[in-house]
Length: 161
Image 1: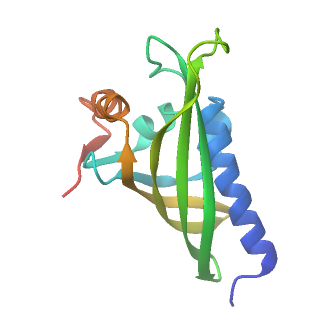
Image 2: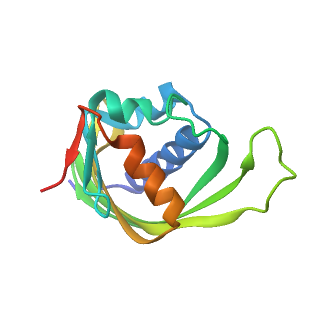
């Protein structure tokens, strides 16, 4: 059965929940956007992030010393699917700002632009991300280094083949 307008609306809301739970460090909300066996693939960094390493991304356990604020802004959604399986591709821009404790510090700046290519599944009536491939069009060099160093040594992430 083709996706309904309601399915498409719920999938777009899923994209918003992903961004807000990551940016606001809502670990429970973050966990709810993924299937139990989900994978986040970061193409440029050659990372596959799964399991506990994936769940920790929104927990604040990986905070940088300066505790920067980020806002992931997804857009341009293209959604296809049938039944309980769907795909979504979208653009994403990430804006980073001063520390949470100093909103009057340095001005906000774009630190990432790229694309998400998602495989989605409906699980218990709710759409979830089963696999997210992050394709980088541009990334701030410092942010790229933080991403790579934040995942090094994690037993749940491995180099993509």
